Length: 481
Image 1 (cartoon, rainbow, N blue to C red):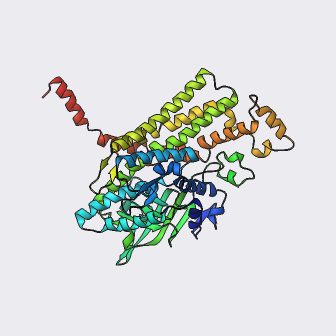
Image 2: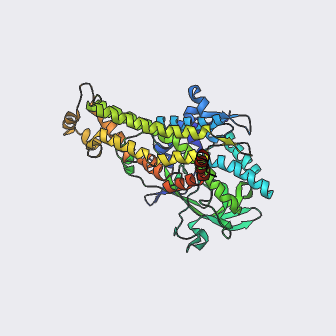
Image 3: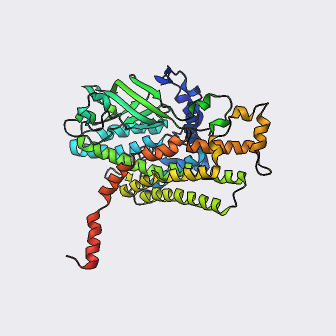
């Protein structure tokens, strides 16, 4: 059965990569204290897939091989698959309280599956078979695959081929019978370092004259010519200090990578789009729809944990019975479940593409993500309200454990009888981590900009709104010709 154990996954990523952090080259990144929590998060996915109680959500039967596979390598074959995807993402958010890094590649594969089929139908190309063969390897080896879309974009007022530096958008610079050579960069790459492979996509609809930018392909994340630069996040160096309490979520974490492609060779059998400009926008839109659906699961799971932390700190503060505290917790639950409802709704109204795979309802997926750009911020605000100002003025763990002053800090951090000041300290740091620390990247900032910033969803909602049909309803009711 092609399912890796957490330990097998860890061993499989111990390979040389060209990685930099804080201006220095990093060797054996899997041992680096800033990176290890993100690896722990991915290992949790492999762990849950081994447990019988979670196998219905964490695994699926491959329509390509008939084998049981990790759901993150599955091509959706039914509405039930779409729903289970969102349920799985909520579960993982609950288990890790951070970004678990595998959704982008998952959503990329499902978008590319149907787009390659449609390109083959129009042009007689062989992209779909190439992709299926590539993806069978992913399934059989239980590989983690990243999806890379966002270019650096240079001057946003100019098109890709108008940039003073043409590498502002990743593009083909050479081509021969064996494959292509590409140059450029992809940014905000969640989990790229922890992935075995990545699938590269265009970042926008490509126009005539820009064919070299309409490119999609698979690549090993440690391929020759790829340089990785680890993204800086708030409070990240706390992971390098003695102790772990100041980290907040000291078990798990996310990861963002700046990826530079310097004349990287891509073999022909790993190319899934090369110049088919009219399909570039459709690939972008389908990926965005799948990924906006994802946010109705992953952000909700993390929201569950933040709500739990807010309820727990209210108990530790002795305020849990106050009516206004209960009302704020109810509001947090209401907002979180609304997001989940959108994720389930767009999945429930899914449909089958001609290629055979299933896709979510695009309008409701965009409504889901539009709500995600707002509600987590309010949930976070209420959590900070309930926690109090100590989440950003708390002394360090070193002070808390100091022989000279530690007992004094413990004395004045004590609240209700039976509640240890160390437990209160942990929860306060945890809320800080989720709302303004490292984890706030994957909960708050990613809620705003991940899967497209707010206006991109509003554009898609406008396209899907069908206002003419709505006007017809009025005319029919009022007998207007």
